Length: 468
Image 1 (cartoon, rainbow, N blue to C red):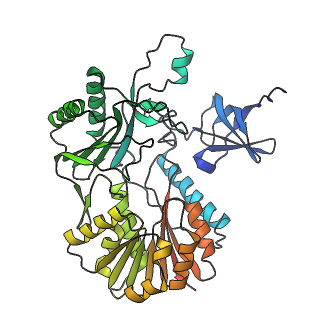
Image 2: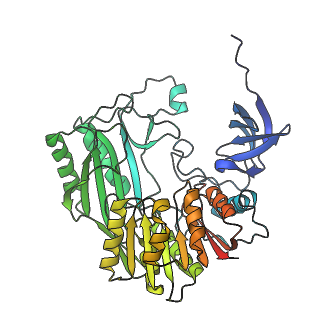
Image 3: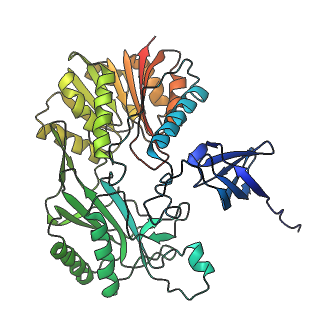
């Protein structure tokens, strides 16, 4: 067996760009090198970690110069957590790189010529903007490189926090997260403290055992709070003790749920949350409409930016009141109900039956009577018979998951021949692929990036397509 070839150290490299996955980019000896947590203008030594066919992945091991653009991250977990990877980048530059990401995808993958982007809509709140966070309990917390190198004896305490990127069984204990407003940090820290003091076991992610598994905290702009505690083991006495503590310590909690999840995976889609105390849902208000949020309801996790997004979708749809609108991947019917007052009829289609039930409730509580919702696989539902029964769409709004639309759904949209398509996407690359499939029949006439997640590399994008 030959020795594995030692990967090189690149010395005094100047970072020039930001590329795939939000990593910084440099060119060394005609080779592209990617490394995280750097920004253009940094001068560093980069240790190569992985050699791919067309590029190298590495990490900075020594700094010579810091970019004059670099700012001090607020979060003490920056660089380890993996959540807010752009905190060192000033917000105006984050917006610039996100717009560039959209433009690059639409021109390179979507092959769209003469592309003009509307100015990206930045988030008024850079911190505390999320309305939902999910934490994991782990019986052994992740140790940082500094702790391991220190050679002092370190107790492997339990953790309540986030998974280390790419490692399912490693959880970083979080002291303070800047993503969600209080009482989010208070609730998490008090639950952890109570669990440790009362010897409640934290989940062992490798061996699948332990009492406490996950903690989900949701909130609304008006300050309502929902807490969902997920247990792996069903122990009534211990569970009641913890839940009663939460009720007593945080009387402001609107809804307290628990779930017993003893499956191998942590997904709650097939689980039944049980209401322990309070009201069964939160109520969010958006431009005069109200939406109910249950323990499993999907909604935009940045509410204020969600409102900006829906306003722009409505503007792009240019509804006069006479149109039949189809809202694909409707979720809890937020967009469908938001545009209903300007349409003749809105048909919402969604894969998850529970989401459709939420969408119907949202229509009912807002006294909206011109919506209809259907559950099932989009590519099967969108048939000639369906169009005959519900009306052929004049406008289609589509907001698919990150993977984009199935090619059969794209074909069904093309068969429906709407005059306009408003395509909302959280992944400009798959959006661009789908736009290319529709390019013979539709032209892109407007592009509006929206930043839903400051300090991350993610960007939402709205595209208006009009029939050729």
